[in-house]
Amino acid sequence: MKSSQSNHLWIRCTLAWGVHLFTASGAVWGFLALLAIFEGQWRAAILWMVLAMLVDGFDGMLARWADVKTYARGIDGALLDNILDYFNYVIVPALFLYMAPNMLPYGFTLLGAVSILLTSAYQFTQADAKTDDHFFKGFPSYWNVMVLYMLILHSNPWVNLGFLVFFNILVFVPVKYIYPSRTSFLRKLTLTLTYIYSAFGIWGLMQYPDVPKWVAYGSFLYVAYYVVVSLLPKKSSVLVAGDAN
Image (cartoon, rainbow, N blue to C red; front, top):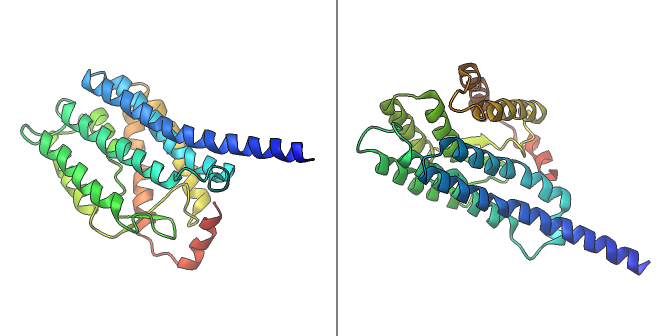
């Protein structure tokens, strides 16, 4: 009986530590993205950035399933996640913005990269950056998504600069943006649309440099949904259910 319990505990601990290792692999994909960016290999950079986002998209769900707080309590999973998010959602796209051609007007590339590094440092370190009812407060540093749109749409550098300034300002505006994997507000619809957006987005990005325009422009329907749902008033009582996930 004791042997069976010991084996069960060993399996649970192994799974929990394995989830932390899975989360930590995001650092590897981010580092490979940096190398690809330095070498101007944009297709490879996209691949590694997408892999890092996939890890970030699934590690929280796996952590709750494996109960890492019980079986791998020696690691602060939330801290690990925040470190990797800043790396992959801020540092990697900052370099991408600086290195990729025609992203920003001449003379603004370094300033643009520095701006998202600094504003995101503020965003990540707010005491309630992730609120108790599972929202992001302020623009949630989706800079990797932003630079990928700039790349595949070949948008005008001045237009890109305008959006960059706008999103930097939104970091300081205390709007509560939905946390797709944890929200309980319109949860099923949000998750379904998020999975569809992700699947078509990944498929489209893998076609780079020939990304179908309908994928890029069609994806803005989800972006519009995300913004509208984030701006809708929500009752705190509706959100308590999210704590169980």
